[in-house]
Image (cartoon, rainbow, N blue to C red; front, side, top):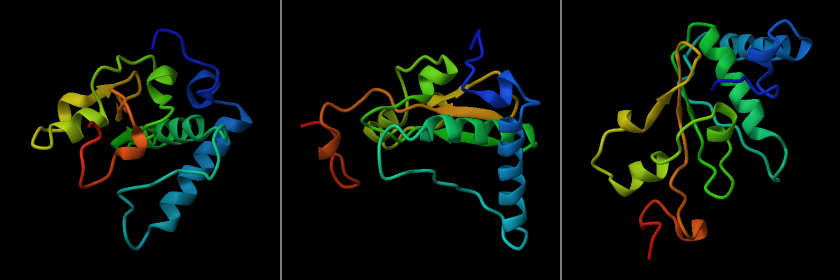
Length: 140
């Protein structure tokens, strides 16, 4: 990630009101889990083009900046975007882990220039995402 995209506001303009909003969201998540720690958080929406990737990337950066070890997973098999946002090599990722079910996750994790943050991309894309399920392979 040689140049920080402006959409990653928590890095490109950390003093902005938008970046502060992500830190506030991080704090609210922290306070909502005082009795029992949250280890997994899912972000989704019902429609495409609602900026899920930008939102989750900025939230992950904010969590990592708050000293939480964070793995950001791109599970969108139709239009993955995190590799583009972070400027990552996208030849190995979540789909690779499913193909090699006995393999470790660590080789597919990619470090970014944010301490405590790693990204698990969605590459390579399956030829038919609709055919993927927990019990069957994504390739015919």
